[in-house]
Image (cartoon, rainbow, N blue to C red):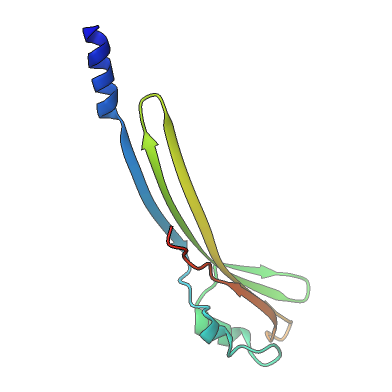
Length: 119
């Protein structure tokens, strides 16, 4: 009986809570105020680079170039007990993609910034 009590106390001391936050990628600079000034046919690749900086990825297609910006935010929490463990991770992505023709003129773009919902 004494061993059982000591084992339970030992396992209780090993248990704990975990909480973390992780952010990586390029700084989110593609807010609506910035991209509202970008227009297909008039904005150049140099204009986008000046406004947003280097992208996460550049993709070369047959007759166009794509610049892709990505920022990842992950939050998590967990409970670690000797016998039972649980971890909950919520990952959100802010992203922007810009398409340029062979003359480095913007042909299309789309952006998404995930709003924090307070959780």
